[in-house]
Image (cartoon, rainbow over all chains, first blue to last red; front, top):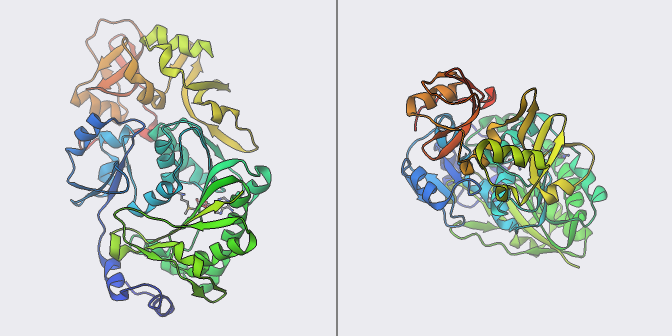
Length: 307
Length: 141
Ligand SMILES: C[S@@+](CC[C@H](N)C(=O)[O-])C[C@H]1O[C@@H](n2cnc3c(N)ncnc32)[C@H](O)[C@@H]1O
C-alpha cells in the first residue's frame, strides 16, 4: 500500500513508533465479536464460544478477539449470527459505548448511529430498558441499522432520520447520555479499507471538522445537566479530534473534559498543540492506535456538562 | 394491546408476565413492541420504535421472526423441533414436508433450545416464513 507523502509527513510527527504503525497497516487483522447479552445467557455463551478459538477482552466480558482466521462472510452464515447472538465488531468500536457508561432506564441519544454497532451495544448494556434515540441522516444506512436492531432484539430504540445538528434545539437538556460517533475522514480504518486514501486531503479534513463542530454543539445542548457526552471518531487528524473538543471547551464554560481509563487497552494522550489550538487539558482525550491494540485507530473524549 | 398478549397466550401458551416490561403500538397492520420510554418519545421523522412483533393478516395475527427470536423461548405449545437437515432448509427459505398429525396454524420452530422463527403448518407442509433478507446458507452449526 502506498500512503500519500503528505499523510506520512503529517502523521510521523503525531503517531508514536510510526514504523510499527505502518507495519501494522499491512497486517490482516483478526476479527472480534461481541456476544449479545440481550439474547444470550452465560450457559449459552459457553456453548457458542466452544466453536471459536478466542481471547477475552478485559473491558467488556462479552467481547472476544478471534485467534483463528475467520472472515465476516463465514460468520454471517452461522446459526448464532442468524439468531442475533453475536455481532462482528472491531474492538475499538466497542470502546465509546463503554466510556459512555449508559445506565438502566436512562435516556440516551446516539446522534450519528448507523449502522448501529454502537447502538446495539448500548442497548445491551442498558438491558433493553429506557430509551435510545438512534439518529442518522442517511436513510440507506438506517436500513442497515434497522436490520441490526431487529436481529439483536433491541426494544429500547427509537430510530429517527434527522439532521443531527437539530437535536440541540429540538431536545434541549433532555438526554442523560449522548454519543457522537462522528462522520470523519476514517483514517483509522485504512488497513481494512484502502479506499479511504482516495479522497484523503487536508481540505476534506477541514470540511469534516466543520460538520463535527456543528454536531458537537447540538449534542452538548441536548444533554441534561450533569450528563455525559462521548465524542469519538475513527480518524487521526487533530482538526477532527482535539480541535473539535477544544472548540467545545472554549465555547462552553460548563463543559468539563474527563479522564478516560479503559482496562486492557494501551491508550495515548490527546494532542495538546496543533495549528489552531493549544490547550494542556486536551491530554485527557485518548488516542487508540492499531499497532498497540490490534484494532482500528480511534479517538475518544468524555465530557461532563456541569450544572 | 390486550389482543396481542391474548394471542401469544392462546396460541403458544406464552405467559402475560413475559411482556410486562414492554408496551405495544399498532400502526398500519403492524404491531410493535418497545419500552415505555421509547413509546412516549415523540418527534418528527421517526422511522421506527422498538421492533415489529407481529402483523395483522387476513386470518388473524402473524408473529414475526424477530419477535419469535426474542419471546419464542417462553412458548409451551404449537412448537416444532427441527433436525439439522430441516434447519438448513428453513434458513434457505424452503418449505418442508413433515409427517405430523397436528392442527393447521402458525408453529414456532426450534432447533435445540433456540427459537428460529415461525412456519405455517397445513396438510403436512410447513410453509416458510423466514424473511428473504434474513435467509442464509448455513455453513456451520
Ligand atoms: C462513523 S459513522 C457512525 C457509525 C455508528 N455510530 C456505528 O457505530 O455503527 C457516521 C454516521 O454519521 C452520519 N451523518 C453524517 N452527517 C450527519 C448529520 N449531519 N446528521 C446525522 N448523521 C450524520 C453518516 O450517515 C454515518 O452513518
